[in-house]
Length: 195
Ligand SMILES: Cc1cc2nc3c(=O)[nH]c(=O)nc-3n(C[C@H](O)[C@H](O)[C@H](O)COP(=O)(O)O)c2cc1C
Image (tube, rainbow, N blue to C red):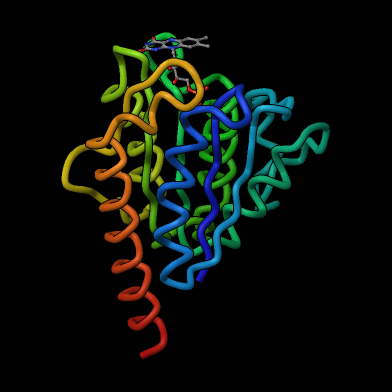
């Protein structure tokens, strides 16, 4: 079983990455393969509304990293979307990925590209907009016929400068619980598919 995390932060080694790694540590302990996709160095534009992806199962524009990221999403059993709060919502880079992924899925509905995968979300804020950001991420999964994992609280954490989030004990505990629940659901789905 494998999980990919997409880090929407513009900062490598920032708070969002710390929170992802908290989830990854718990998943790896449970022998789940984890891969981190960083959008910080990627130059991904939004959907061009060309509808050229009808029947193609990926975007037809290969001029940036999107196609590669979407192939990883299709190949994963679980997807962890993580974003810092930027102006009250998810980062533009992650929005571009989700916008294009949603259109490709919509134009290829019969292929059920992300159906019944397991989705989890993380949001990191300095002060405001975390729940809004979490909602945006969760709504992507709900639109894609996926299962969304909960935790003991909404999986959000607080911090501004890199490393700050490591002091948000409640945020870290919530992330660990999220990992535990992801693991349970991944195993349950794997068992069901194999039965
Ligand atoms: C462009 C930009 C916009 C931001 N907007 C908000 C905001 O609306 N609310 C908030 O609480 N923090 C905001 N922040 C702060 C970040 O969410 C915070 O520093 C977070 O820890 C960054 O995560 P990172 O270390 O993974 O980059 C913003 C930061 C940037 C760079």
